[in-house]
Length: 143
Image (cartoon, rainbow, N blue to C red; front, side, top):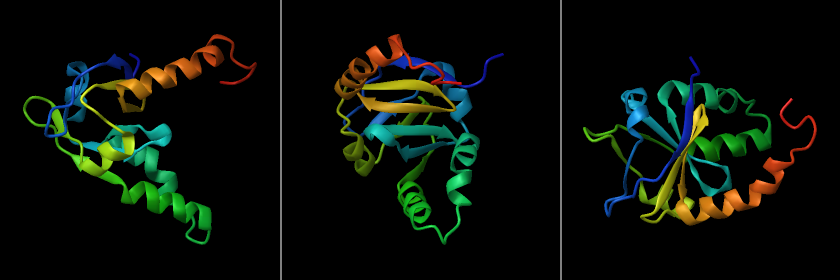
């Protein structure tokens, strides 16, 4: 069976900054959700185990490497652990909402090891920018 997160979901964020996780994946997040500032101004949502796998390289980066220290500090200082409530909702802290420009209309996408949380308008713009490259990928791009 294929493991990971896939698909696109369009929950709304409530006035308290809560987002409902997709029903089909809620059980995987019962141990917690690690929210991380992602690239492209979205948020990454990992299971605790998925985050450990993702963050391992940054956590173990040599402290003598200035670029590695900067990445490590930024990523880990901007990570937040959440516990879903009985309805499968997590609270997205204000600083995370601000970073990702989240409004009430959001998109939650499955991207293998993680889910991503996007503002709906920004996701639409991102998709439009990526469409041509996806339709005609460079040879060897994913090899």
